[in-house]
Image 1 (cartoon, rainbow, N blue to C red):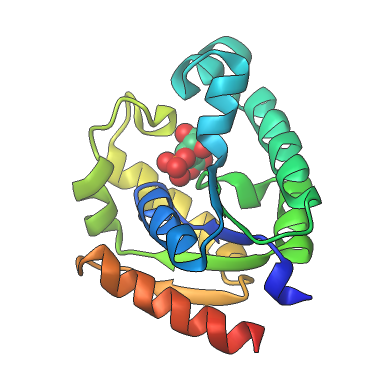
Image 2: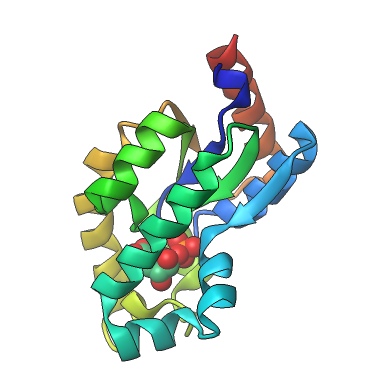
Length: 174
Ligand code: S3P
């Protein structure tokens, strides 16, 4: 039953998956899990250091394993994934088939304001962050589009985005 499936937030880095996810979990009275945080705790390393020491493909492998475990429990939980998770086919299958997927989308200008200089985003380091974000968005949007639910999250307060997610989720799970 859809009502018992995990709600999985996807979308570009900086779009607000963690912030909206926490509010959403509280509104749905269920647990919230941030996949990146789980990985950091399990590996005992920051995301940039995992990328640097083991490479992105290692990160994608543990990201897929982490999501696989999280969606295995047949109960409602809100999961915030990293922006690139959907680009790994195994992870994408878990997201599309085991959960209700919610794509949060913001303009690159909004993303850039939020995270342009964040040292915790390895993919944005040592390069023109605007250019990187634009290219990633172009490559990922066709995949994000597969989500069950699509919500535009601009510069409005988080509560407004939350309201939009809750309304669409309600309509989807009816
Ligand atoms: C990534 C986004 C990050 C994190 C890693 C890779 C990406 O998560 O998983 O740095 O490929 O877009 P957030 O989307 O939470 O920033």
